[in-house]
View 1 (cartoon, rainbow, N blue to C red):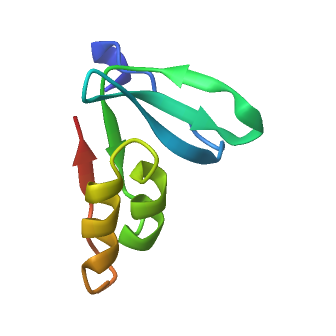
View 2 (view 1 turned 180 degrees about the vertical axis):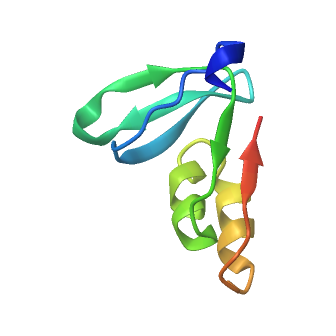
View 3 (view 1 turned 90 degrees about the vertical axis):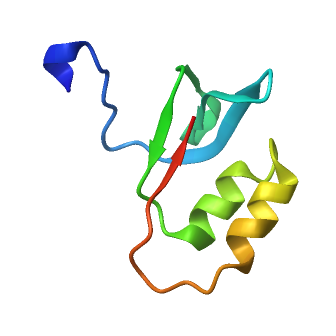
Length: 78
């Protein structure tokens, strides 16, 4: 991925997925830093992912929270 120009951030916490025009547009990192991007891929457990998107998409956050967590589910936000 890095060879194709993808920037991968490791070792930093995420507080929220940002939104612009109905699309994922970045992340709010721990400490309040905003990280702009045009795609977000999450491997967070659904209970965590639901909280990350709840500010931008309350309905989607609630839908994720309503799924019975089984341990291995990955969501892609685009």
